[in-house]
Image (cartoon, rainbow, N blue to C red; front, side, top):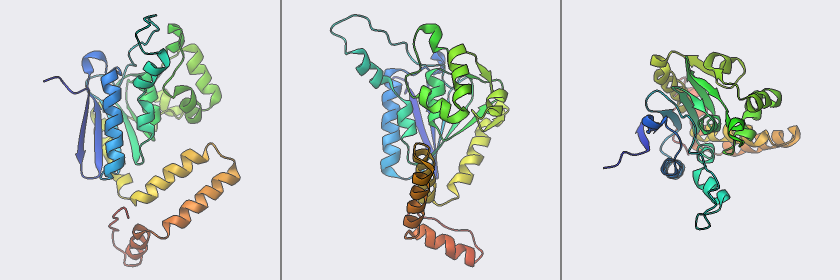
Length: 259
């Protein structure tokens, strides 16, 4: 039986997605991109998980993707269609629930684009992150040119894009590319601890925070404030909001249902 390119496991409210092609540096293949789309769609539809952790098997998080070239074969699909088939970051970015990248090793090119599509990032000491696309005559194409500037700022993003310089985990944390750096042996525990903190909150509220932050980034301040207010009003009618109030009044831990 062929080895699965992506493995999904779930324990309680936390799902773990593991890129599972360590012998290839977990590079994104067509099969891996397809599996990621299916897994993310399933998580969104089932609604059982509250947090997703994305990580890699072996020594690398993800060292990029298969290089797609226009081979001139008229029988092959057009290059834009092939690129669309290999896109994977949009699947991660489209998750309704919170997502954490546990960067266990190098995150390069499309691999860094996958990490950027997550809401939060924890990196292991010694991991390298960056884009080397220009040296190959191409540009990032799986969301990198849009997500990196929104994460570290336009000037810093342009520096990393144009020079191809790789940053180590510690510098990545200083510039806001990752949220936290820990020794490799502590990475999964750190990711699980962060996931547990997130999953202790009301699931609908977590989704609305994601929506307010991500959508608000593309709005004017006034529009963003209106979105925040609308989402807050909607939350008042949920069972989780009622449970949160009752738990506070009765000085007990809330039991949220996601309703």
